[in-house]
Length: 161
Image 1: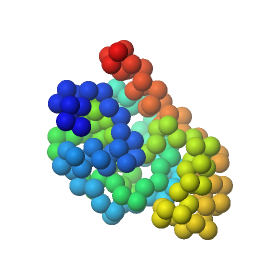
Image 2: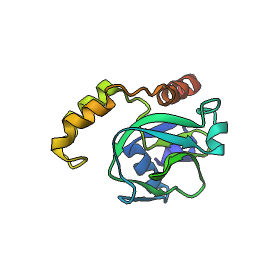
Image 3: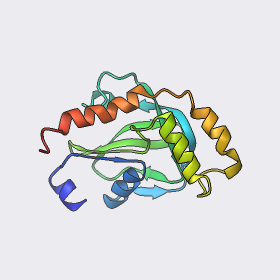
């Protein structure tokens, strides 16, 4: 992360990428705020509502996630862009171009079904709940979350070439 941060190089860390970036920059990552695998609503902060990747979106958006650990406190000099009642740091930005999400903007029901199957025996949820989790996400729609990824690519694809 040294060069990414020093150069404000466009970066989007998702899920564990949020914890890795947050920890690297001095934030606190802990197991205090786990969230079960599935769809949840998150709230954009006022900074989030004016951020280029989130501007014009509804103040509440639907995302797919599932995590045992997350940023308990954001890194110094970062800007929290989204949260919910269960986790106060679900998206943050560092400088102008470095982003982290605790959720999966690339996520869709098919991808999450695969994740549930792969992670069934890895402690994210009781294995006997896998089918129930699959059924709970089958009809999830997360167009705003997916738009974040599309906006990131659109915003930075030319700057990185």
